Length: 65
Image (cartoon, rainbow, N blue to C red; front, side):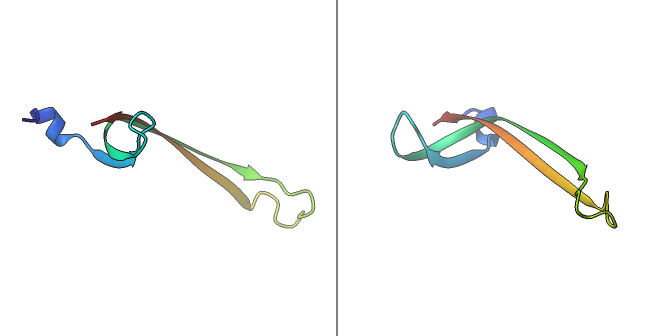
């Protein structure tokens, strides 16, 4: 029987490198990082600083069930 903590843990079905097929995985930890910065286009003097580049990274630690 699953413990109370395990029953609340997020589970994803993904490829397992050890099992070599799709299995359920516990999501142990997840971190996201986001950022943005203005883009200066050399050929666009009229709209300089009007463009923005945004990105995000998500790191997920998984454990095969």
